[in-house]
Length: 115
Image 1 (tube, rainbow, N blue to C red):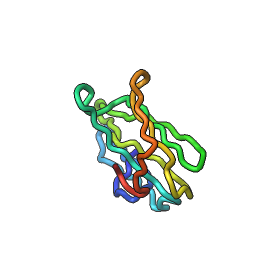
Image 2 (image 1 turned 180 degrees about the horizontal axis):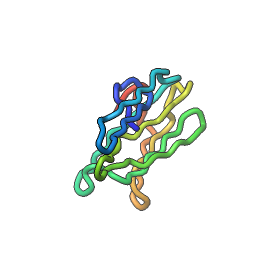
Image 3 (image 1 turned 90 degrees about the vertical axis):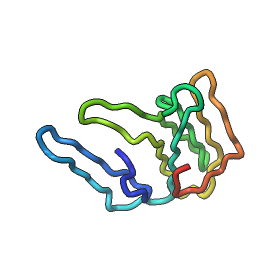
Image 4 (image 1 turned 90 degrees about the horizontal axis):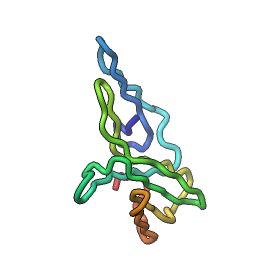
């Protein structure tokens, strides 16, 4: 899954053995707000694969792990994508590994974008 056209809804790109590539675009559109994060490591794990990101908005918490890598005919979007529904404000974003999670309570990114 990935946000192929950058409009906030998730699309699906399929590869077929002995066939072509199939893009299934979500034409319904994103209902409510959304935000995506493109993570980068500073020393090791520069793609930030496996990093846990937790977002809190409207008193609810969502969590996602950054994915990476791939194999034959398989890959994934390295961005982390959250649907915000009707939330107008993001209360907090937490990111990091199990041991070194960092929190930024003042981090209030703009909905409808990739940061």
